[in-house]
Image 1 (cartoon, rainbow, N blue to C red):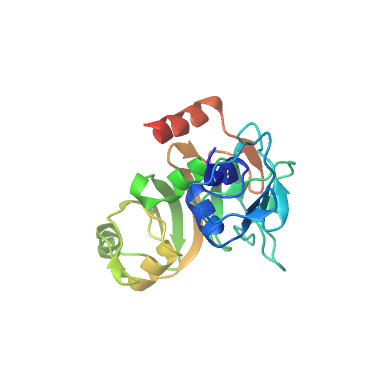
Image 2: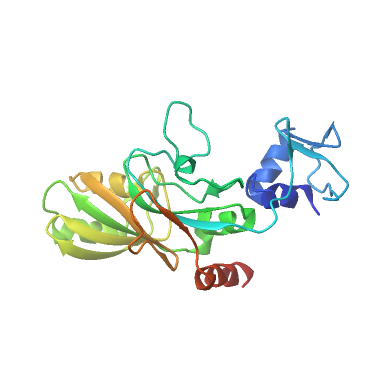
Length: 232
């Protein structure tokens, strides 16, 4: 097994991130630092260490849906802050796919499957993410149209989005990308301000009635749909 795949299946990171860790000299095999990306390991014989700690394969992959509350950071480690992993009490190491900023709530997928992590995180796979947005004052049809068409941001233009108005200050938006604080930035560009942002869907996984702060394992059907897309 290639070393970056081992890191992924051990729940450390995606394969791509594993390549970065290997090149940075953070991985040892049998006490020797390895920087060659083509290195192969035998899970039954070789001892693999990441950042000074021995790591082992996790076994059965885990797929979890969490309803993230406000005030939690989407991170595996953030000194001085509450993190989303504080809400999930399982012995296996998992990590979040993508991010929701500290002030946002809603659906977050967590897994120890590094390949799935890459597939859902990378914009080239065109996975939809749907959000329920409330703004500080009534937003015009023109502003929603401009957001839907795409706005200049960080040197490029945001991709077209689907928007459905719910009320004068509330709408739903479907994105196929995930730039840093993208919805909040777009709303500011049209002269308004987000006061509530909740993610309600990732790909075909829906938040549904999952209570805030609670989590559940993905259903067999949900896992099948995700993994079918992964292998297509």
